[in-house]
Amino acid sequence: MNPRRKQRLAVVGIIGFLIVSAIGLMLYALNDSIDLFYTPSEIIDGKNGQKPQVGQRLRIGGMVVPGSVKRDQESLAVSFDLIDTGPTVTVTYTGILPDLFREGQGIVATGVLTGASSIKAQEVLAKHDEEYMPPELAEKMKGIKHVKPENMPSYESTTGSGGK
Image 1 (spheres, rainbow, N blue to C red):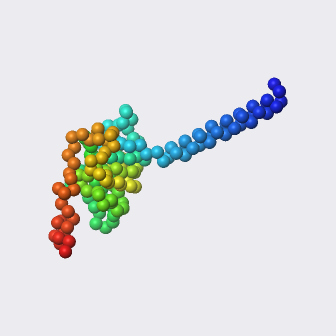
Image 2: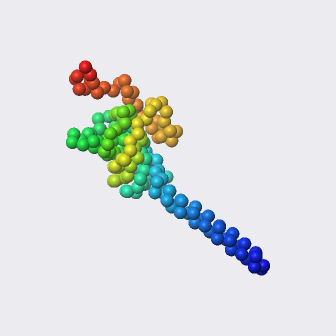
Image 3: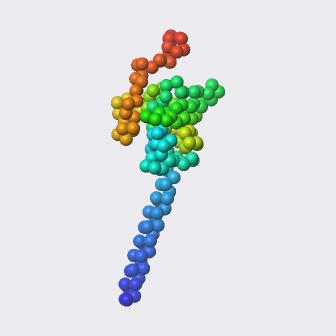
């Protein structure tokens, strides 16, 4: 083989190796930031035959079970149960909840699985529009009654001050 061809082949081989290595390193780095979406039933029963592992980052979506919200009087810690069509999953969160968060409302939480049916959330998002839902979540949640905001007791009526 011609020495010039050998040199070109070596350069092309090195460039190819560097490109493959860079792609591999990017995929490895992105692996930590991938959050898989689950419903409460998929956390308990598994998704496609696989259950999420304790310590795994994930996103969970479902309806907040009415009467399940428990707030700590000393801190911003709150815990609540999520449900879709089957079992419930307990979510704990420390921080200020979104304004649209309420019992009977659909939410999506991002966090870490801490037990078979418990999640420690770092972020809680409340649905903006009560009519829109991702197709895969809508399919899972058929038959669950949604409590509209006007049917929920307001903060003012529960404090007795009437806001005046």
